[in-house]
Each structure stands twice: as C-alpha cells, then as structure tokens.
Amino acid sequence: MNQQFLLAARPEGMVRESDFNRVSTPLPTIGEGECLIDVHYMGLEPAMRGWMENRADYIAPLAIGDVMRGFGAGSVSVSNNPSYPVGTRVTGSFGWQQHYLHRADAAPLQRIPDGISLRAAIGVFGVTGMTAWFGLERIGKPRKGDVFVVSSAAGATGSVAGQLAKIHGCRVVGITSSAEKCQWLTATLGFDAAVNYREPNWQQQLSEVCPDGIDIYFDNAGGELLNTALGLIRDAARVVLCGGISRYNATGPLDGPTNYFNLIFRRARMEGFIVLDYADQFAAAIDAMQPLVAAGQLRHADTVSQGFDALPGALVALFQGANQGKQLVCISAPDDPD
Ligand SMILES: NC(=O)c1ccc[n+]([C@@H]2O[C@H](COP(=O)([O-])OP(=O)(O)OC[C@H]3O[C@@H](n4cnc5c(N)ncnc54)[C@H](OP(=O)(O)O)[C@@H]3O)[C@@H](O)[C@H]2O)c1
Image (cartoon, rainbow, N blue to C red; front, side, top):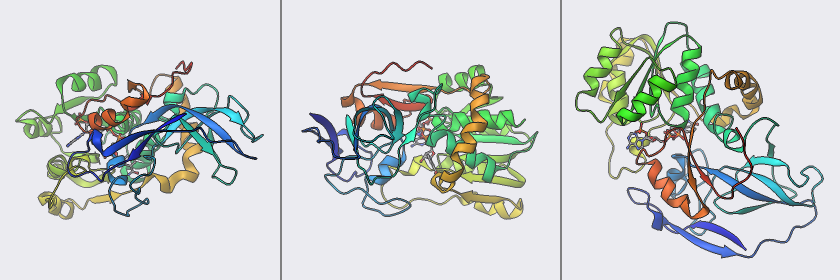
C-alpha cells in the first residue's frame, strides 16, 4: 500500500494538521516506460501554504483531494524505464506520499550525482540553495565590503545566502527568532552579527550592528522586518524580495512597508524573483557551489523530523520557527552519509 497525505481543506489563518487527510491506496502497477520511486526525504517549504490556497500565482493551486505537492529525494525501486535503473537516486516533485509513480510521458527526473547526499540534494543543491544563489547573484549583486542583512537567517535559504555573501567578502548580519539561532549563525556559520527580532529593542540592535546602513537586504520575512531594513538602506542598496513568510498565514488586509519611500531617497532597488525562472542555470550553480561545500566554506544544515506521519506537524513547525537549516521529513531511512 502507498500512504499519502491529501489536501483536505483550504487553510484559514495558520496552517493546521487537520488541513490534510491521510489515506492508504494500493501501490500502482508499473506500465511500460514507467518506474516507481521510494520517497526517502521530503523537503518542507513555506510556499506550501500558498499552494494550499485556491489562488493562481506563479504555480497552479492544488485541488481539494490532491496529493499534497512537495519536492523530495528518493530512489528507484521498480523500473520499466532503462533510463532509470533500480537504485538510481533522484529528486522531483513526488508529493506527500511514500511511493511516486513516474509515468513514461512525465518530465525527466533529476539524477543525484555521486558524492551528494539525498538531504543535500533537496537542500543546498536543491531549490533552497538555488534560491539563495540566484537571489544573491542576480538581484543582490554582492561586492566586497557590502553590508548584507538577511531575515529568516537560520532557515534553509537564509543560512545559505548569508554564507555565500560572506564568501563574496560582505559583512553579514542575520535576523532570526532566538538567542540559540543567533549563536549558531555567528559561532558556526561565521556571520559577523545576528539580531533576535523577538527582543523588544531588536531594531535598535540592528542599527547598531549596521552603523553605516545596509547595502543588500535579502528578505525572507516581509512585514516589520522588511520595513525596518528599508529604513536602514544605503545609497544604491539592493533589496532582494525572496519571500514574506510573516504574511503567509495572515488573515485580513496587510500593511505595506511605510519606509518604502527610502528607496527613492537612497536611489535603491527592490526586486522580486522566482527561482524556477533560473532552472536552465541550476547545473552551473551546483557546479560552482560543490567545491565550496566540499571545502567546508559553505555548510548545510537540516532539521529532520522522522516518519511519514510527521509531515503535517513539520509544516506547522516551520511556521513556528522550529527549524534550523532545511526542514526535512525522513519518510524511509536510506543509507545517506553526508
Ligand atoms: N522566490 C523564490 O523563488 C523562493 C523560493 C524558495 C523559497 N522562497 C522563500 O524563501 C523564504 C525562506 O524559505 P525556506 O524554505 O528557506 O524556509 P526557512 O527559512 O527554512 O523556514 C522558515 C523560517 O521562517 C521564519 N518564520 C516563520 N514564521 C515567521 C513569521 N511569522 N515572521 C517572521 N519569520 C517567520 C522562521 O525563522 P525564524 O526563527 O528566523 O523566525 C522559520 O524557520 C520563504 O519566505 C519562502 O517563501 C522563495
């Protein structure tokens, strides 16, 4: 049998475990040209909250009753497709299920190169790492000596973006939600400073660690964090609009950033992007990042919840800031050394 989580309800406010329905369905029979993937890890993304809504934006919404969408890593367990022999390690949009049937006419699967773990394949070398890379390189355009500030800094994308900015010679400041995460950013990842936005004077702290202002603000959070950063930008600053997690579960009308006018005074740019637009350049970015990871200059971390049933709770936890690095769920434990 194949265990699956289906979308049971459109979320209202905070996403809830009851928005998903767990079902057990017979394993599909494998036709000509098809193969079956055992899903080992599922990556959790804040964007999942948006996919659950009935709203067309950059990707089609899910219908009630659909298998929940999700990118994962797995291995081929049964194959009628010579391109994917049994044992091939792959990533793809497998959905929240234990087994994924890859049909003959489906888009090709992404093979995981030797030397890359399944977890890294959906973390630093997956959409997460690509988002950090292209947001920084294409929009942030870092220069040595720039002051680089990132929100959700201890999360999957933020932790990679901050380290890449450091490699470019920037002074790197992270914003996150706890003293423990701040300590991890500075002591383990080499950030120059970190600020806990749950402390009442965090805005004052941010201006103190950026006394001359901010050249690049990489925004994952939106809301008050974005507004505060806009108030501190320097001339010709670049504001990278990567995400805005503070608004994903919000209900009712949302405030815009009142400090946006500083973009005019500071002759600055604020620009959004969707990482999938760079898909044809992912391979080159991975090639550039692999030596950095191998040399220990770019560390990747993850928070792994265990077992298929952990999926809905792990998504809720992501919105509570429980993760450090990429939030993953281990669905079936493979041998996956780093
Ligand atoms: N543009 C693109 O193509 C693209 C692609 C992928 C991801 N993204 C965006 O990138 C951002 C980061 O994604 P990720 O996958 O790397 O997730 P992540 O940062 O690993 O996890 C989410 C983090 O958001 C923070 N958070 C949760 N609720 C919050 C709230 N109400 N206010 C402020 N912060 C909150 C928490 O960190 P703290 O402990 O620091 O609060 C949490 O750990 C998201 O906004 C996502 O939508 C964009």
